[in-house]
Image (cartoon, rainbow, N blue to C red; front, side):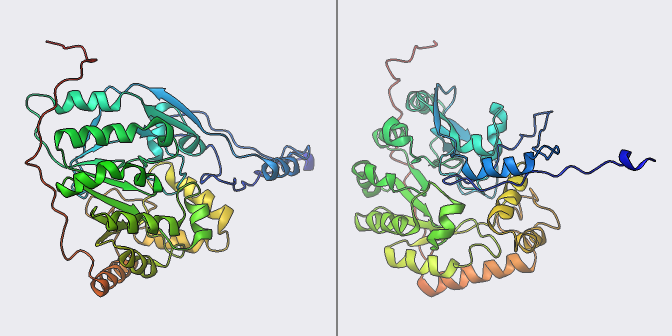
Length: 372
């Protein structure tokens, strides 16, 4: 073969972190048959690509208003504590790189990467649809979690108030509910949550992944700062709203201050706690690898080796028995650390019991056309 015909391997343009965003690329989703990557074609595109990435402005957030067909999602997973959930939004501007809901954007023909945190779907009629579902003749009340997939108090909620409309309905009909959030926005709705707490109809869980503000800024770039989340816990506890802390997810060699988080949360007033280890299904695995390469290149291999150790040698194992906590020596170490810290402070000695007996089916919304 002539020397000039020897193929030269393509050099991919390196990815760079984007300020204020978790994902570093608009990764192709699993249903897309075409995949493209930037590469050096010999015309200085490698240098140009690096320069463009360095000066690239973070993509702006766009909120798309849509009408929901259904409101209540049934949970069939035995490793999740609630049976039903309501999510006023799809996609989440908080941009947490580890978010297990990212792959759902693929069903919208959008990227689980940057699209997930910049293309937000707001379900404008969520409360009206929920009212219709709660008024069905054979509906049996069970705990409903608000915001299980994406944060129900993400920035769009400040103006749209879709989560508030759902809480107003739940208070009206006496339906028990829980909230999981990383946002201080929950404080806005204390006028609804406090009376519900007095009736044993609500519990709130605040996620604090780390107390390290620098880490939180790149891991969860548009969520509230760790110290602000502690203030949320303190405020909720002070007005009698049952509040717990989620120290999830645990990521080996990344957030290693679980004990400090639990101590701070206990001092702030949280009395229940839970954790999970990082899950990397579908597109989250390459997204997380990109994030590691951008922020922690020296320890990327070590982090993934421990993740795979907890997943039977894979990036992810969907087995219900192990997917939340993992398996193996490293998973056991995290479990023992969590249990030891909880015993030390007194977490989970008394569970939160919400009252299912107060539910009264709502009258149908006058704006809904009767089918029969």
